[in-house]
Image (cartoon, rainbow, N blue to C red; front, side):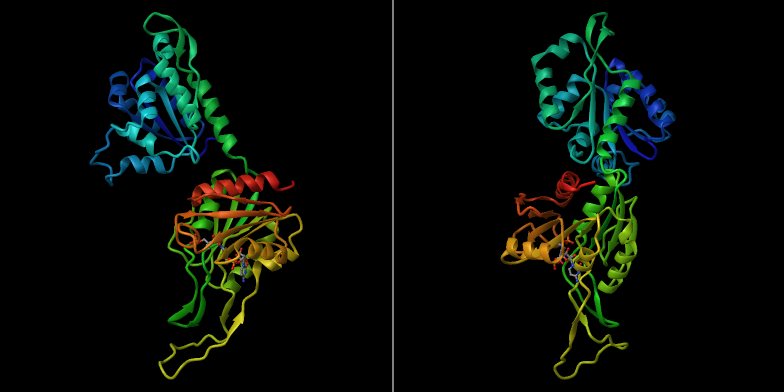
Length: 400
Ligand code: PMT
């Protein structure tokens, strides 16, 4: 189950760091791609060369490594891992994480990782007296409350000669924990999501089209979140500048009619359909083969595009159907009307007039309207975070 998973392994300076080599070996053996970040103190215990040989990747240990292509190595490393594991985690790194200190590569990477997106496991290892120190105990409690997973140290013989609690969980135990955490995040496995995103473009002539301000961010964030949680994702997108998330089946389209065709073709594959796309309701009746020349006032006739969501609503069967409503007034009433007209299970209403909501932002502010008439209003949050919240609700309310 670790095949193709990117695991960032942080190693800090404790005697247990020799076990990190075995841990890396086990992770690699299970198919994981392991990227190691070591602190300077860790290098006093174990050589980066060992870790490089075991993982097949260079080891990162500096914020300012000229060999790294960009100056933001900490952000680059924090962006993509499926899981972060710090083993061993010394009292020092726990203290820095709790206090918000980022003074080397590992502590800076840990500050940039979002625990909502990627599980972070900490495997403390230290002398019993240190572990019982109120500061360390407090730090562990605080980190747990912030969403970090702490692998409780074990009792046994310690390197200093003492016997007591403080031994790092053995590599095999940590491997199991990694698998459990990844499995828990893959809660949407077995489900196929059909997600539409972005605007559509309705061509007038070879130089002009009608469209809207949708950037595709909301739909791509949903596709990414569903994929991260193990769902199979079919992403059908109008033109955007975004890279499709990795691992999704991607179908680019331009016009509403193209979107209609591919949605109808894929419909029966989906357990859940989320229509985030801002589909143009109208298109020019005529598309001109040559660029229109300037002349007198131009009168164009626009004709209705198919309402894709409405049509899905008539044939949805067991599919859980989620629509979006982009509104500028009477938000909840208009959204409720759309929900009923289009036979939706859930509608996500955003008010385009609210700062930070709707088109072209990285954030959104929405209300979720459910079939039973209830409404849940969510505060401003990133489209990534909102996507996970929407998926949580779908998981809760969808009948199998
Ligand atoms: O892409 P971003 O920049 O991140 O912006 C996100 C967003 C504002 C586009 C998104 O949050 C959003 O609100 N999407 C729906 C936009 C919209 O078209 O709303 P609507 O109220 O016009 O349509 C209601 C629903 O019917 C939508 O799910 C839409 O996909 C669907 N529809 C509309 C018209 C049509 N012809 N066919 C459809 O399927």
